[in-house]
Length: 561
Image 1 (cartoon, rainbow, N blue to C red):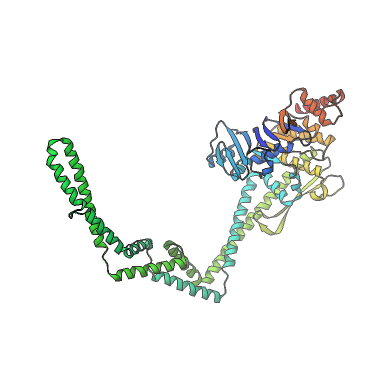
Image 2: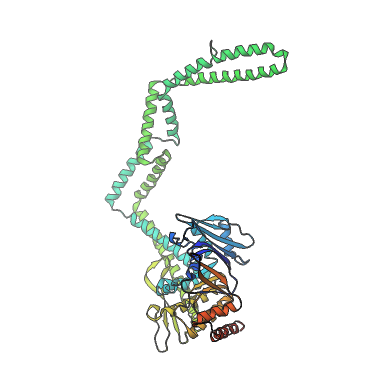
């Protein structure tokens, strides 16, 4: 459940925090007061696009925070948070987004996350019905999404299986297409591969050899300079007259001659002895290194030629010796395929036939599941529509097999409807008005809400294009949904506002030279005052307040049924 919404420096909102409750939360306000900003801020927290113009004038950054409670039974949500390594403290989930031009920071419970990860978590927490979402009902692909969502986990698992098998068929078909070659092309490719394979084979490459050769070549190429520098260093550090070794030996003899007179002199003698040992080790190692610099000119030439050979192969077949050897293995495998090309292609064709059969079986099962669910969805959705004042509605969900196939199967799903007696069912696009589409989407949300674990539903002006008795029916339907889910609804109709468990008003006011939007919960008579405003009276007369009170009482009578 969405517990609170905190918004700072967004559009006309300087800073506001709203605490929502269970049941039906209603938001109303004058046109232009900023109702859309509130829903927009929720969408921003969940990853919607942020534009510089959304930032409050003079502010450097904006902040939106959503606080949710996590119930013990929210296993999918807990598993997702565990997968993302996000801690769950006191069963609360805090989603935040700090926005500034060119930079966005998303966090869940203090852990920095990506927009995609926020979306994955949000899909388990909240379902938002935007102002124009009902227009998606005019698209057939939306009909399939609704039907598959109604099918629940079994339908989703089968859909995943269809997608996996579709991709397997697609991959095999592409591989087969890429490898269909004529005999002349095969021969040319075989000749080229054989030449390249032989060239690499004859080099007798050893992993890591190039690094060793480069070190050896660098040492050989600079041997004269190295020898001269080592010789000079030996004169300074050696045991000849004037060398450091000779000087340290004389110093050590001096110290040892007096060491018996003081224990501290013995320690100094030991230190100097260690220095002498180290210097002797160095001189011995340096001499051995100089001896190792002696080689024949032929050795240098062979090293240079071998290094050049390896570098040429790296230029042709890979940036590293390992890539050259990997390329050799790939050429061997390809030559094996081409050597028995007909059998290779026949194998691919057999794999494709088997994969296609598996895909056909999965698509057939998907069609069966959809048709079965279509019957159930038609029944419950028809009842929901009748509850929204579609008294003579006829609904049909048609599932037809098409010629082509996709990752969703070979079906086309279409909702057909008749809202008047004596008329046959026709596609939604030919029948439904904007207001009817809005009610149909509400009915769909109501039905789907009963089959999933999402606790919070947000409706942004679900009441578009309706009034009177129909508005009451919508209000009653929202209240029914709110018995099992938290519902947050923006409305301009008093019939819907009267049904609120919590009623919030969004207001715009001028403070000095600044316009700000704020939101507050209505208490007591304030609720009647807002209902009176929604009723459209010229002034807040006793008659208007009386109508508002009667409307509120009618709503309360429905709530206690």
